Structure formats: structure tokens, C-alpha cells
Length: 129
Image (cartoon, rainbow, N blue to C red; front, side, top):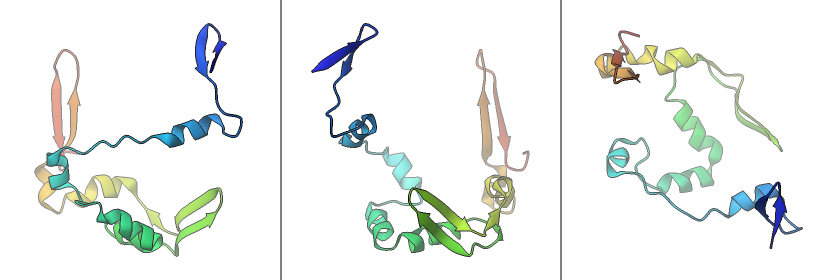
């Protein structure tokens, strides 16, 4: 049954749950487009099993893809509800998003695409950034 609040119908939340619990019942799945899967780092759902078996090993392997100024000492410090990832590590987001691509094949690829109104467009490569 729904109750009215400010003239709008509001779904009644069962007493045993909270409003956030309602969001946990999502069952829909949205398959990624084939072109996205083809170029993705993780191409199959087997990554879920790897992450489940050893969460820290899984994320550590992906973190090694980044350029770190200082390596981390611990992958995860978990004291519910607080989590700290890669403690002791230091990285530079700009280096990882832009600079590291200058040495490879991406240096001439589009890094930033801007579209304005009425149809203005500007594309900057990693080298130009």
C-alpha cells in the first residue's frame, strides 16, 4: 500500500527494511555492446570468480598496470564500514591519465574530445595535452 506525501504516492517500505534496502532488489542485466567487449581489458565474466577467490590479489594485479610514485604497503585495510585501498602507496592521477601514454602508440590518439553548441568540436591528442 502507498501513502501520500505532498500530493504524491510514496511506496510503503516494509517495517523490517530501510529505503536503501529497496535499491538492493535490482535484477535487470544490461549486456555491453559487442564493440565495447572487443576492446575491454576484461573480456569475460571469469573476472568475477578471480575477484571472489582472492580480492586483494585481483586488485593488486590491476593496480600494477598503473605507474606508482611509491608502492603500496597493504592492498586493503578493512574495518567495516571503512575501507582503505593501497595504503602507503602514492600515485599521480595526471601521470596515469595523460603522461604515461606519451611514450606509446596512444600519443597521437584522441585524449579529449569537446563538443559545444552549435556543433563546435575540438579534439586534443595526448601529445597536445
